[in-house]
Image (cartoon, rainbow, N blue to C red; front, side, top):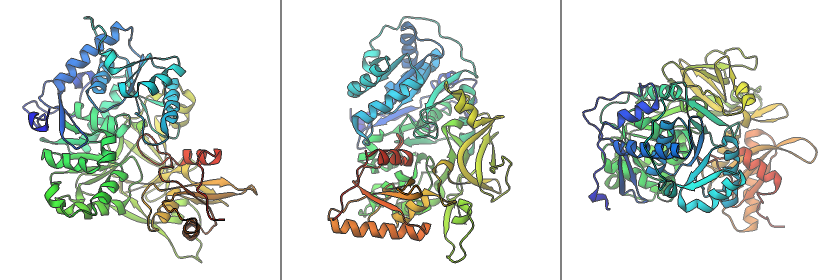
Length: 577
């Protein structure tokens, strides 16, 4: 069908909106199905190719639920689902919820790492979640079945599972304290532990998120985010059902190939008021449009009310570049809505009030790292982004190493408490006890509070500590990015042990220069730049483009980069003799 032959689901209808205030997610699906709203799937060019009303989603989910029960699947069984953006995954996820089984969304292959890397990752997650069956898209049958075979797990394609018998049967009753799904937070501190999320926690977070965003009538969401990551799954799929919002989707690989199609879909629907992305999504679009002059003719971003930003450190310079690139298309800087969250709290912990935009504070780097300032050197500052205020019924504390709460503008570990905090890590009591203390969640992130707003400065685990002095890897990476020819994500910084047993900073850098002599000059430039930031010499390795590993959500994985480098799997480019 062509775009013209399809009518997208509406933004509004007569059914009164309920902001996720349901006992269980089952109830949320049932209520959404009473409206004409639903999900709309677009092709690589942003053309509408499938309209999927919530009423049809519910019908399909109930049929799939009967298939699951007929297959011997019941409450608390795990069902691993490769999370391809489309009706198959949507219906089966909801089917698992109806049955009381726990859907486990798992990633599709990415362009990073190759076939064997994907099979290894999938096998590890299957081992952790111990599902009854893995269900996957037909096009990745070879890789998915190979991973399942390693774990002696049954596996089947979405297409084949849809052919199973679906006899009538009674569905179990859901309880708000039941586990709704397992979420693997890609590249998290305790990967590969599955976060167990209850119905109550999910709906509390969805209510708080929609309230903080001041969700109103005639809203519409546009997304390219993957459904195996919490921002894509919770923020742009489950939230739409629970809050009765229509959504428009591009697949993540479509965005990777044609990122401006995201903005085309927002423009074309004339109602794309909500859309989210990590920093790199805005960065890619700003870079792609820089050579074009038809911004105002091609795009209409004037209705984009909430341009959510989260899932990674927020870069004010990148956000400004996006504003500069798309202001003529009606995009307003005040639409940017920074947030902070993590899968262990379902999704969001804090959200910037809509309309306040991105607000930053300049903080001395010595304060960020907790080390005394060298008065012989000029002060250096980093812009720290305001990530907003807590959701309703959520609390945030900043704690020092002694575990005591700190005052405003005092940097420490970020802890949070509230109904959204996870039930546990699945089958990992030790990891659960490590981060959950008296109802408080240790997020593993560092930040500070100021007048009720939260500022995030980095992850505690990424800190590079050399000679007793702390350095954030982001500071080193951002410094190198200022050199000509580098993009966000081209640099990974971490510490290594040198031959004499001392710690030193190491920097892996994507290199697009082919001449060996020029490579030597580039390496010297980078070393000088890092020396100006850290005051120390560092190990600089130039590596081929697209070498640095990413998490399934597209974020740089410093820990994995370090591991691959030390094991010899990342091979630096040769320099002139």
